[in-house]
Image (cartoon, rainbow, N blue to C red; front, side, top):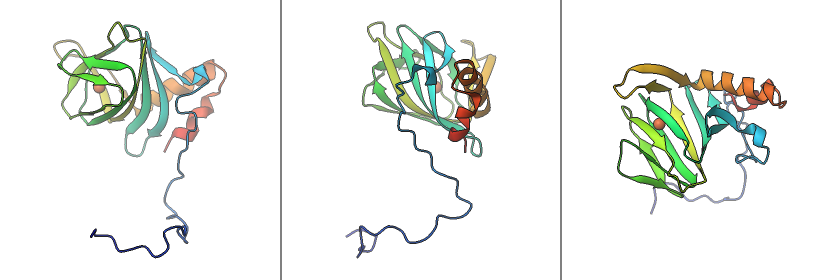
Length: 175
Ligand code: FE
């Protein structure tokens, strides 16, 4: 038997309000959007679709899309990353495994890697939780730039304003 007592009323909803400090939930029905404009360009052949931009804990949930020979530049993660491959296939120049559709990847703190999509893959989409910062480096580890949840928000605002969705679209994804 499990550690949880038997529920005599399994279909009865919780009868009390949520804690008053709890933030509102986020529901994104079009996570993989029909509206192409929701993909925010971040490099040649690389886009992201923000889902949750968490400014109180410093992480972001997003879909990363890479098309044809796109590369996600070499970067270091001081914090863990979780990924789930929704479509296509990719690998890191620094590792000998390939992340395949349906696969899960954990990237431990301390990882530095370069994400590459094989030539025979038209498009890959991966759901990533990125914590803290992506610290972009040259092959020797020298600093080239960084991204965090705040630079991601800025990028989204600028792009959504430009394409006519409106900068404030991003507000619904911030917690
Ligand atoms: Fe990474």
